Image (cartoon, rainbow, N blue to C red; front, side):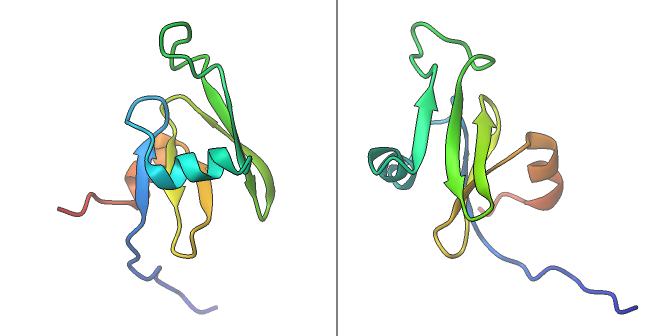
Length: 92
């Protein structure tokens, strides 16, 4: 069996309901590709906030504190913080 190494790829990402929501994310919200739920900062905590993201694999759910990633082809998907932090390093 052959062994492979993942190619280094830079992606854009933010922590949902923690960091400001970037324009590329809000564009997907405007086009209904992403549906926000319980996202009123005055009313809901990060534990209650979530979003539903239409992906090629189906609908995925991002919870408060999850990373939302914009991939190399413009695709958007959620990633749990522990997996994200093991997979990605911050580019300065």
